Every structure is written in structure tokens, then in C-alpha cells.
Image 1 (cartoon, rainbow, N blue to C red):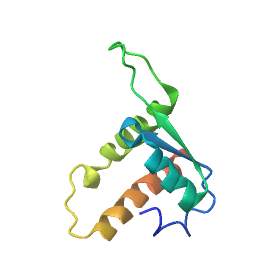
Image 2: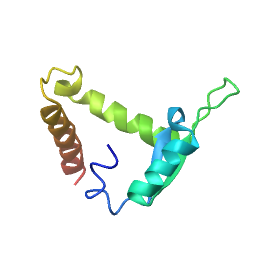
Image 3: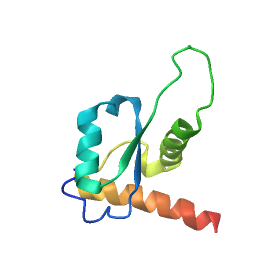
Length: 98
């Protein structure tokens, strides 16, 4: 995916990922395709609630998408139309904030 879309992601300097994307292979792939660094937002291993700022950004973005009625379930047949619905949901969110 990074190799296919590297032309559209030239301005990306840092990629924020979940704890599942740890590893040197993923970081090296991101660096070769995008020339960007990888930041991993890990959960707290102490089993107590603590707000982690970077992880909160990821979780907050998913909760914003869940508020959109059309994205509550994936009912689209094609991946492109599903992607467009995600883009439209974020566009509506940005326009409401202006």
C-alpha cells in the first residue's frame, strides 16, 4: 500500500501507528517508500487507565468515524466507494468546525 500511494504521500514526515505495527521491517518499508519515521503508540502494560496522547489521536479519529451513520457498518461493495465515504465523513467533520 505504501509503494502504490507514495506519490500522494510525499509530504508525510512521520507515521503514527498502533502497537501491532512494531518491528524493523515495517519501519524500514515506511522509510524506503515515504522517507518518513514511524512512531508507535503502545498501550500501557500496567493494566490501569492512563491517557496516552498519541494513542488518543488514533482512538478519537475512529470514534468520529463511528458517529457517521453510513460508516457504522461496511455496506459498500467496492473498496473505492468505502474510502470515499470515509473521506466525506472527515470532510463533513472539518466543515462543521469552521
